[in-house]
Length: 344
Image (tube, rainbow, N blue to C red; front, side):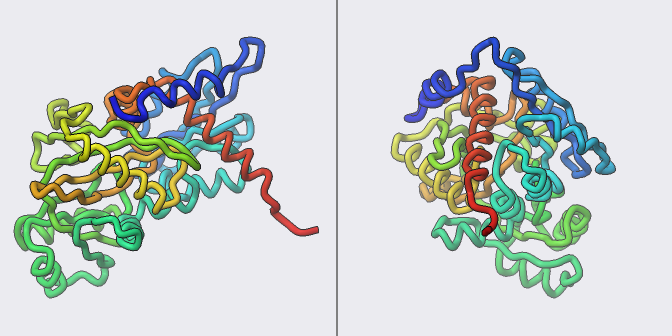
């Protein structure tokens, strides 16, 4: 068990007691969306709905279809929104900005944390500014790419290298390229999901993930390890192939390694001004050096997803985790309501 195990449960017992005679909180569960992660969002929403305490909460489903159509007016009827729209238009600050304008409490990172957490280039630049080690990378707009530029990038980063849409999640549109032909195909694929493409050196090492929870005083879970059976932890390995990866929770690590990855997770969380929750992904190289891969401000929430599973191993059940996230959303809303918005 991690050094934070059980802490969240003790807090919840005191903070979240709701007498039976009090009315239920109405939770607007916003899911779906028109990104490539629509189906994953639906799975996450189903798990959240099934695990919310029915004695405390009344769930109001707000589904966004693949064309982006939804009943926005439903949000006026809820006490708090749980946005679980993965990918673009959901975890990139767009939805969060709308909720801010509607003056609605919502779970997860705010506009800034969501936006910079979604853009892999901006994220990495902020990590570099905070002296957090990341893989070497280059970026280019689709219209800037030429054979000459690709040869320069490949010469700098070396094969194999990863090609990613700068703004996407769940490994959508990501390819590991081993030569120029594969690199061109990878660029075409990534360019179908975003106008900005990230090129990144391939890091050989153990894939370690930590879950972070909190606003002002974030806590971190025990680390877990992802052992893909595919060449890398791609979309198919995560969501289609049931044998696509082995999740080792907790990861077999020394005490010093655990401390180091947990501290890096918190540093990354704060560097991006995150709130509510995030999953932080890292690599441990054979040399022992830890390299930060990325942060996910709206991680998968299925029953088999790493974010809730890491908290379960740390002593916080799925249902209690949802309680805490909702409480954090309400606390942030209350704090912001007390700010001065205009001068008389």
